[in-house]
Amino acid sequence: MNSVQNIAPHSRVWIYQSDKEFNASQLNTITELKSVFLEQWESHEVPIKGAIEVLHNRFILILIDETSDKVCGGSVDSSVRFMKELEKELGVSLLNRMLVAYKKDGKIFSCTLPEFESLAKKGEVNKDTIVFNNSVHTFSQFENEWEVPAEKSWHKNFIL
Image (tube, rainbow, N blue to C red):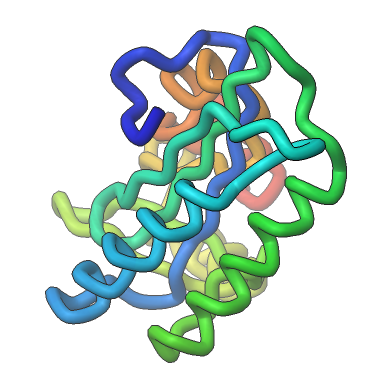
């Protein structure tokens, strides 16, 4: 499976956020490298039913459908190694969990958690600001809880 179209709602999800928007060259590189990775991705010598998608030219979504088989920890670790390889190849940060992404005037912005808190104190972001909750764990959560107002996410802890 190389697309999210037929993914089960309980499928596992990992979201990696770039510190900046991907350009066309970087998107081409991601497309090439993800195809190679997905072809070789296995768990106990069984191909993994998974997908990798780029969203908003800033997020990389990895999905694993465990309908038929559970995926071993080593296979999950290999996806993290893949993200580290992408970081080097693209010259971006993908593993910084202290980054926050939010929408303002139809654009997506990234900042550090302390910067987000500062923006909240200044009133530049609030409970209605759309944020990206990268801590979702399943495809169903992704569809319903990923792109939400700050008041419906862990981000609410930083909004006054």
